[in-house]
Image (cartoon, rainbow over all chains, first blue to last red; front, top):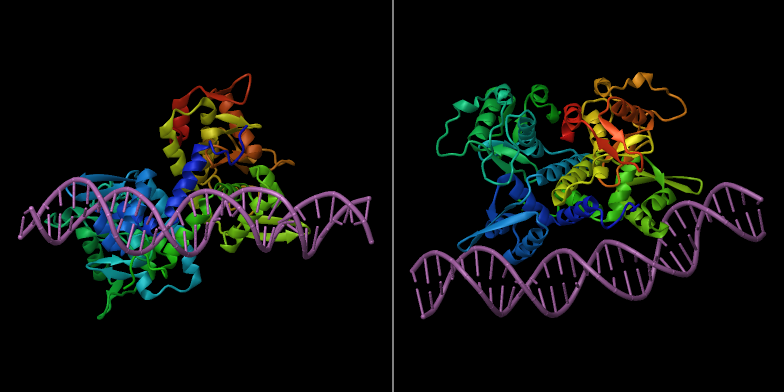
Amino acid sequence: MAGWIDPENRVLAKATALAGELADPVRLTALQLLAAEGPHTLTQLADAIGVSASRLGNHLGRLRASGLVAVERSGRHALYRVADAGLSGVLAALSRYAGADAAVDREPSPADIAHTCYDHAAGRLGVVVFSTLVERGALRPPDGRGDEVALGPDPTAFAELGVDPDAVAAGRRKRATACLDRTHRLPHLGGALGSAVLDALLERGLVRRRPEGRVLDVLDAGELTRLLPAFG
Amino acid sequence: MAGWIDPENRVLAKATALAGELADPVRLTALQLLAAEGPHTLTQLADAIGVSASRLGNHLGRLRASGLVAVERSGRHALYRVADAGLSGVLAALSRYAGADAAVDREPSPADIAHTCYDHAAGRLGVVVFSTLVERGALRPPDGRGDEVALGPDPTAFAELGVDPDAVAAGRRKRATACLDRTHRLPHLGGALGSAVLDALLERGLVRRRPEGRVLDVLDAGELTRLLPAFG
DNA sequence: ATAACAGTTCAGGCAGGCTTGAAAGGTGCT
DNA sequence: AGCACCTTTCAAGCCTGCCTGAACTGTTAT
């Protein structure tokens, strides 16, 4: 009978190997960006993260060797994407743990709680909007295979936020995108639907834009918590 | 505006630090055992895992320094426990990912699917029984603070398995315990209720004990999948 | 063809982690 | 007091990981 740390235990070996890949800030951030926002080329990722191409390239080579990312070459570009959609569950659990833990350290600032990202809501509010829509079946979780988020089978959660997904113009703009939040490391909702959700929240007087900067002030935390239980 | 790998980002730092702690087989196994089965002394853990006291002591010192475990001394014993119940979410996500990933490698053996652990069910069946009972609110998730698992608010899931929790004798034996599965690295149900669940499954003819060994043969996978959707 | 661009690989050097074995500090038993 | 036991600490040795800078392959633009 093999012991607990039998090196032949595949589950243990895969778990520790994955944890090791997630233990570096460059690798973790790269995986979070790929999982939330879809495929990127190496230089896109390097510019976004703010590291040199060779530094990122070494990390991506490691991630490729361990099977966590896949690469598709087209011309002189290399398009990286996460190779296993199941990874997002681990990434979300890790971010939730780290976020819940970090909140104990000090009171979050107003900008942590809610701010705008172009024309949609980010910060804790944006993250909770996204996770609630996913849990309620109104959005599919990002699979890392494209830069657009698919709608889920049950759009009622959109209606409760005051948005009709079908009424959002399907113009040139993408309907729903996932945008990784810089501090919480979880996706928030962008695209036309993200803009519509923020408009509805402003319209109902639940939040208000500050005249300067990107901070959103929460005006009715009780109603927001009723709409989004995870917000409380 | 700080970049993506700003060292002052607490969430990123906590996430990579946690991943680093989980990246060693001894530390990961120690945390899994503490989270599922409750507090252990150093020698209990060292004997269970099969490593020397000094090797485990070094790892526990690291885990203590990072705040993942807490220790309470009583006499010449040191009782270790996980310091944050939220850790179990990350551990479960990691094990589920590693298990799902490992299942692709090769067909699971009958013993992987179901076997007995003393008088209760273990293997994939045991793990799915436990997770289903937790998800349905019949059991509280283990919090790592005791060796007994508390019942949840809604016992209907027990009834569907053919067990009446109130009828289980509250004798000397513990009512419900979590027992970490060696291969899947997730808890399965032990104690008097674990025994009662296995008895009910045998009684209904859904599984059968082999005359030799501890393997349980699945006789009615369809009905088991109906009772436990995650089993399919 | 030449130059610029995108990506990959590699060696060197530095830093940190893991294991082992021994030693030391405390505690309980006889 | 003496001894056995539980736990912790520490240094040595070994191994691995990370970053940098440069070289190299292949592609696109002028």
